[in-house]
Image: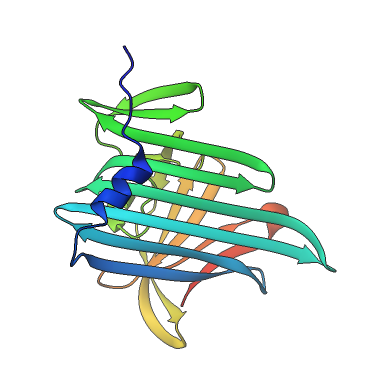
Length: 210
């Protein structure tokens, strides 16, 4: 018999009643070439040995007042160490809708996608940019579509990056996953600073930390 998952948003509400949680947040302005198109926010709370992540993205690209592309994404994750315990995400990618729910059940991580599902190893990581440990993985869970994808990550290269108006030393990583190529920048103490990738038509999509 299929085990029923605990409603994730209910779990999040119950857990968030804990008082005195440590919290980190990252707010990124998102650019397509030289045009600002939206934002992507991440809030991470440490509560009783678990980490709760909420992320929300909203992009909109217009040309001459005509909306050409829209992207909305919300993701909730619960982590125990470097292992994902639960995930629930909803995405609208220009009219294409995705919904993913998953949680660890015994020795497996079970993903539900509508009537479909899959079982993964008990300890999986998503594209947890805020946690540089994810760069050591060889497979990551795509929070938008629920697929486990193979990745390759380069050795970091020294770089310099302008963050909040000041130039700082940074380490740049190149991450490849299927047809996706990402560049990620971290500070010398491994704090996430920026992201960049190539969008459709050879354009450059980048995250600028606020």
